[in-house]
Image (tube, rainbow, N blue to C red; front, side, top):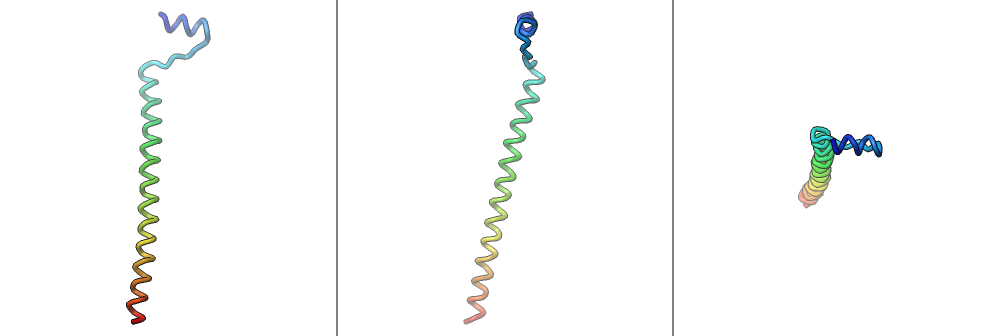
Amino acid sequence: MFWTSLYNKFGLHVLDSYELKSVYEAEFNKIFIGGIKMKLAEALILRADLQKELMSLKNRINQN
């Protein structure tokens, strides 16, 4: 009743618990997936750097 009167008086849309849970889950998923993507990108960069270093070491060994 209180929320209905607020909505009617001010035109406010108050999220019910289901909508609120959905919003929080969506935001959490964006942050979580974004974090995973960032860690994956860091791992790929590290792998590329390690491969470059390995090739450099192999070239030095082959020169000697």
